[in-house]
Length: 247
Ligand code: ADP
Ligand code: MN
Image (tube, rainbow, N blue to C red; front, top):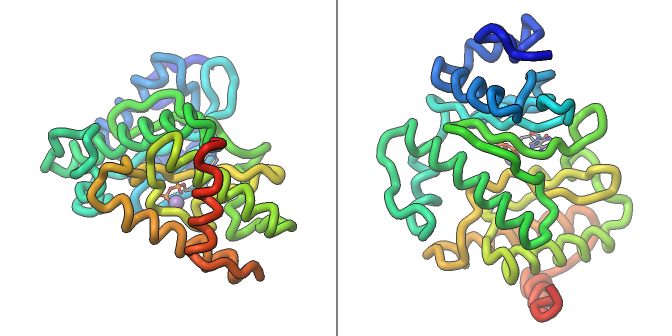
């Protein structure tokens, strides 16, 4: 199923019309660029329509399922984005115009997914990005996997151990703080935990890294408490530290 015309990467009329309403010419061209390189053959359906991004299930030229996250230029909170890009040594020149900030953000999410993957943190494997479009591993079966919010783990004690293990790899191996950790950014893929939404993750050297880490820990403790497992932030941090030499 090749791409011959300009808009052929969307087969369904309804999807095409949503896409055209939300994305500009340059975004459509960015998808085409990725299609020309084989990373996308076509977009199959919408998984999520967030304020800042849409996520699509797609298929690549070899027939593999893919997730394609496309950041919206107009409605992204680019001032907030700047705060996470500034202070990150990987981005020496933080752009000031909206479009470039969103492009930098997309690149940041790609780089973060790459670092996490290298450190064996279970995140979607990143495959490519161009401008505001990111192609990554699709997490799910036919449909995308649900978040922890919608499909909690049966064994909460086991989930706690997994989360502590992932956090230890994030901090000690990837040397990144996720900075938006919650039950909304974790997927339950047939009982496997997959952490998503990594655009805001910052290096440990970021001036706010500690603050973001503390917040992540608090959010997770709140979640575990709701699920019936009492852990204080101190306990959770100790459990993470205990893994320092074994990650
Ligand atoms: P945001 O919260 O900024 O809108 P997310 O990265 O959290 O963006 O993605 C939004 C939703 O899209 C997720 O809750 C999940 O349902 C789905 N999603 C994101 N990435 C993937 C992926 N790699 N595979 C399957 N579904 C995904
Ligand atoms: Mn999210």
